[in-house]
Length: 375
Image (cartoon, rainbow, N blue to C red; front, side, top):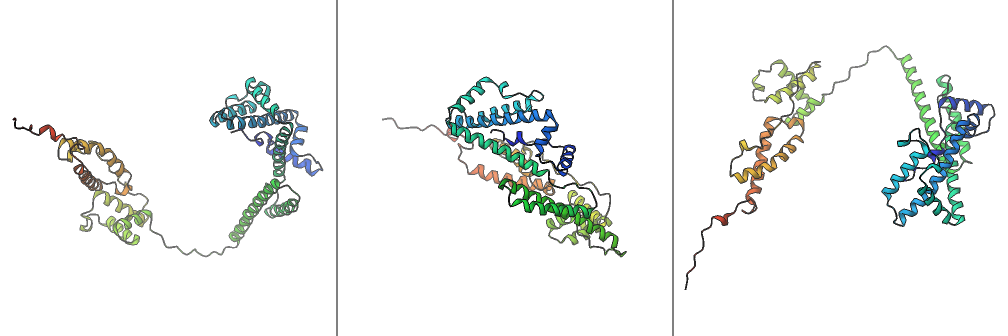
């Protein structure tokens, strides 16, 4: 994986420089952003030349790396690690922060291997590769320059910003006919950005207008929809959410009623939540947490032979995991008892269906010796 060229060739932008460049263009300047930036900042020009040199060498490295992989001399993972390290050295990133190096500071073995392979290529192939690299760099420069032409963040009123956006869209549409395909894609993206920005501003204008002209009439109260607790309770007990809310309200009003006498502690807790949600209560009772099964491998409730108990114990942790994977509402003490009994019965059938030897039994050890008649 060789880093793309545009990582080097994209200009470094900041709002202050972009504002200065726009002033330069509005006064009749013709230079592209990178050329203008380099002309007013010698340090930036030096860095730009370093980037160009590094990008050109990495393109040659990419050609060499492709050959090494295709010929089986190196594998992809090895090339990926080497590529990342070289990229970090040439950009001063990763393990080389503040220690940026030039191509000639790289390990001589790599530089020599790349150069040796490069010079072995036909001259025409070298020219085509270099041309492709220059074209990629130019595309990156053109796209970055194009991005500086949007009137995003323009000052003025909202109406003035909308008008500036429409003018920019019209200008981009006129330029697209003569632009290369890669710039046309960027221009389409810019038009979409402008249209989205215009739409947001227009929505804001309409909202402000509605606020100013809104009549002083009370908003009709919307019917309240049952909350999640009521819906879940209704689904579990086969009733409508509205009926669940009414049941919850009755529970809050008289929790000692015979209607609720057979409910478990967990069910009463959830019903209290339903009632509080229906009445708009701000403080709700604590919802009981999920039941945590014992880790004693269930032997306290498992009867049978020692072999069966040992066999069941091996499966007990997975039974606990399955129970914990259920909905929280089903992780109750009652639910655990039902689930454990079901699993114990299922595993008992499996255990009984095995041969004696598979269960660990050795019936032959207890068989009497066979006596024969001697002649």
